Length: 137
Image 1 (cartoon, rainbow, N blue to C red):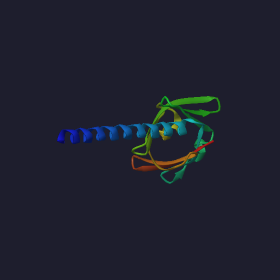
Image 2 (spheres, rainbow, N blue to C red):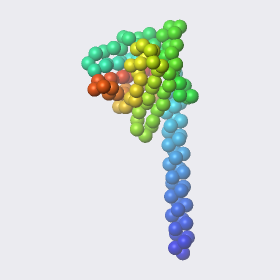
Image 3 (cartoon, rainbow, N blue to C red):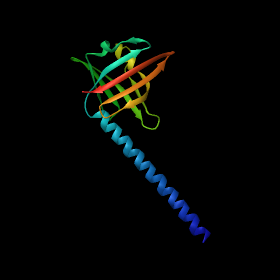
Image 4 (cartoon, helix red, strand yellow):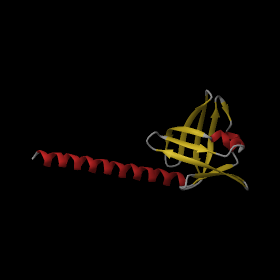
């Protein structure tokens, strides 16, 4: 009888763990779908106490499910990488060195607010806090 109870407990634990992993994967897939469906622009960017939003005004961003993101300014496109972590509520982006203003988007950003059409995040680099709001077009 004890063996049956132990087997049932083990089976239940494995089932719960498996279901939890499936749910996490579905949540991650939904996040990727929201991010990759449509183009985004920088609605607000404050670096320390300086508003530098206008530096991004000509850019739109297309996130792709393969982990790339393209910033397009007219006919010029620069491709970087991105990844999202649902558990830690962060998004990490990296553009190639020398990408100008787009390098200000490099780093791991802590998401503080979001919906299907916007993301608010911040990061601190070298004691400077950057606040960002991305808006879906």
